[in-house]
Length: 143
Image 1 (cartoon, helix red, strand yellow):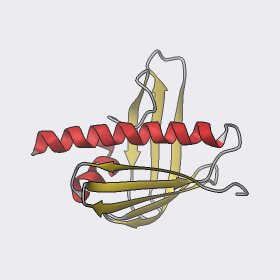
Image 2 (cartoon, rainbow, N blue to C red):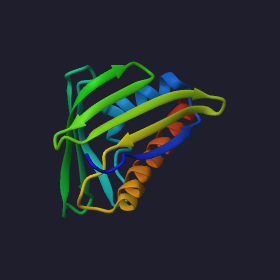
Image 3 (cartoon, rainbow, N blue to C red):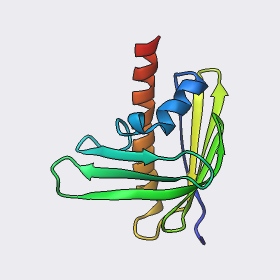
Image 4 (tube, helix red, strand yellow):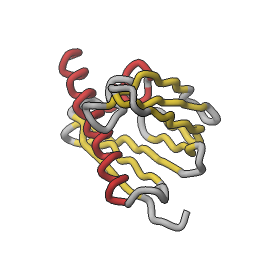
């Protein structure tokens, strides 16, 4: 891809192992993988292994629109790193790092050509912010 990758990140106030599970397990993904309150994630299938595939459905709550995010895992290093290729050939990496305040999650992705880089950054950051809130709520409930 000719464009430089876009990076979004957050720090989750939860242990690394818990953060990893909330990010990778389908039963959790459906609770956070959407960019705004008027959307939701009604389905997620995740075969987390090299060569495994995933399919995540994101949909407007009013039923007006939905789409599937699909891809294949290229690298899976438990609790530290995931790399995958989306069905359109764009590459994404997700890194998990234990830090003083919890777990830092860093996502780098190839931009698509239809929307501005800033619009894409904002969308992916919103999803990651939803993840942080969900993971922190889960960690607090399990404490």
